[in-house]
Image (cartoon, rainbow, N blue to C red; front, top):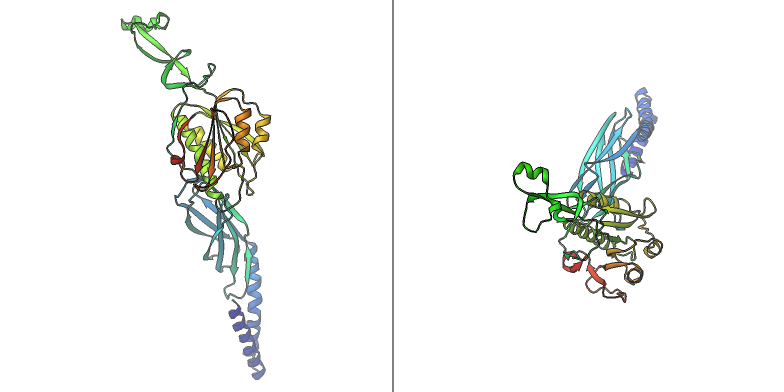
Length: 397
């Protein structure tokens, strides 16, 4: 652009000499036109700058890891002046990482029109991916002037975690809530408020379970199997506090989310309802979510991913646990990247649960952390980032 300005300045000088050497009216008109042209370019481009608006359009609000997702940059020019060249500097980053990737897009923008440019991105890790225009430069047709506009236009996308196979076991001695409104779809029980199935009479069946009305129609005894409540009070506490800001922060947080999602998926698959507790930075406090099925798990994961703030701030887990009473629960599982064992030790000493697990996410196999001294019912397991299935073996929930 500097070379263009120098050439245009040289052209003005030449036209000035032409006007001095020749007395024709044409020389005067040419000089006026050449001098006026930059002024016209400046004014029209400035008007166009104030009339340009930018936004990002996404196909959906979420996508899976390692999948390409399409992003469309829409530039609308409401003025009557065309922009011969626009340069959009696009940046994108995961909220868990300080690393920012960028690229440039070049395009013209027609007057009273919208220019759309579509590009694809992908993320190796789950979390929130932000796409933003750091700036958009517009140039006049002669490339004499450049104006910067549409700074900081953003859009965000939730990248959902992968579900890993967990080699775990559901405790047989879990506490059953007899007042539960949720019942097993696979196992009968003794709750008369819900009928699990109907079957033919077998020797040893209780007479009070015979369906007399239906039996009279079938000319055979039909027995009712009652349902089994499955509202076992299990809890997964996801500690989203950032204990180390380093290049490994992104894979560590990715593993935290995927560890929770995999554990929760396993528990739902085994008809084990449970609660999720995590710090929601948008609301500014710890919240609980009841996970009863795969739909509620998906909703909880999406809510968790979109609840982070850019500074990765999270409340103190031990302060929350000290104030909150969970009562007696069958299993308590902590998922955290804490290495000093402070939260794990507090859970081992203060939380009343039949089974306690602390899954500590570490970036490397040789990472060190302090395991708390606890009883036989507290199990501390290091989970290597990116190796969930291999790290969690024979865990009991």
